[in-house]
Length: 126
Image 1: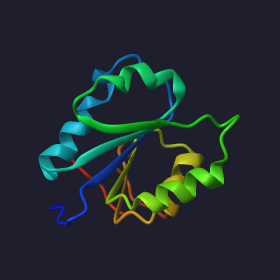
Image 2 (image 1 turned 180 degrees about the horizontal axis):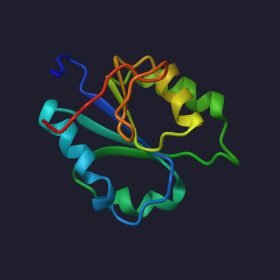
Image 3 (image 1 turned 180 degrees about the vertical axis):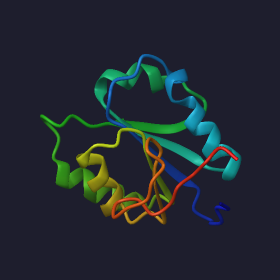
Image 4 (image 1 turned 90 degrees about the vertical axis):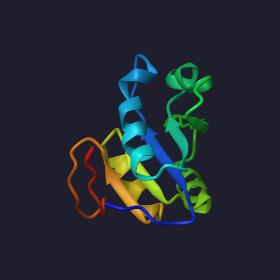
């Protein structure tokens, strides 16, 4: 798959706890190979904040807390950011909704590598 666009913004959704950046950095490499000048953004939970804080690969990260943050506001903000790719690394109903309403040109489920209503592209390492 060739990604051609002036917009290089890629949002990775990581709404589960991870132990270290190496747990998911391989996914960044897959996107960087296919879209070399991409800007990587992360939507994550506050427990992962320190993992993403000093990472050169990531342009910006922001956190979401389902108990205190307004989900509708999150959806509006993500749509407003105009991401080219949404790459879901969590694969739960809430992230399906985020992907669908983002209006990103490419919505990718990086866990199951399947397309359906919420995701319109698959990606492989080739």
